[in-house]
Each structure stands twice: as structure tokens, then as C-alpha cells.
Length: 168
Image 1 (cartoon, rainbow, N blue to C red):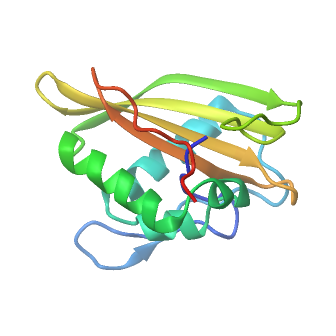
Image 2: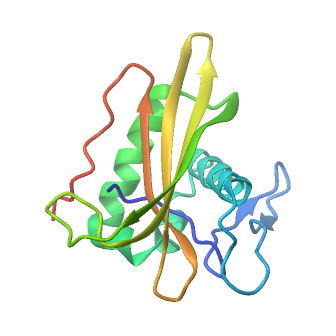
């Protein structure tokens, strides 16, 4: 699973309000773990996508799940995402493609995610006429019962996704 970013509670990166330079934190959920709602995860995924497009990759990584940090170093994550985003262009629109919940219960084999609960959101991102990319944003329920970003993979439409196997 790729490294990616964005925490649910307490560790969310802040964004600048357009043209103001004022930091704006993503909406925080009520106390306790988030409900498993497709709408909730879609909103969180869009915040991750917008933060990545806004260049807040280091902050996304810092607030991500330990699962992501174990899979990929910060420098590799930042370089990989910046590369794909620069090649595919600025977003002109985002729409959901899929939202799914996965439970991994078996001991992991090399290249597979560790056991746990995951929610995977796939966004279609328009970047111009006949251009776009798919962003796969994955959240993991961490040991503190909080959902945090644990994967962000972007690939140009019609192009293979970048490798997500950790290279330590």
C-alpha cells in the first residue's frame, strides 16, 4: 500500500484560505471515532486531494497513519506525488469513482497491507480537456480508533499507477 497523508482528528494539516494566507484546518469530527459513512470519507479524501494539490505534502505525511510511515519515507512520498501532480496538471474538478471498506485479517505477505480496517476512496480528477488522473486515497483505523490517511496514489488516466512497494 502506498504512503499517503491526512489525519482525521487532531493531526489534520492546515490549509490556507484562498488569497488570505490564513491557515484553515479541515473540519474536525465530533469526539470519538468517525462513523463509517461514505460521505464522511469522500469529504476527507477531497480534503487530502486539495491539500496535496496545494503543496501541503509534508504536512499530509506528518499527520498520516503509522501504517503509511512504515511503508514509505517522507521524501519518497513527497517526490512521487509531486511528480505525478506536476505531470498531470492542476485540478479543474473532482468527482468520486468508488468508496469501499476493506478488512485485512490475515498476516501480511510482502507488498500487502498489514491487518486492520481500511476505507479506500478513488477520485477522478479533471485536469483539462481529455486529461485527468485517478487518485486513490486510503484511510486506516489506527490503534487509537482514529481514521488517518495511510495511502495516496495518483496516476494519469491511461497510465499505470506508480509502484507503491516500499524501498527502504
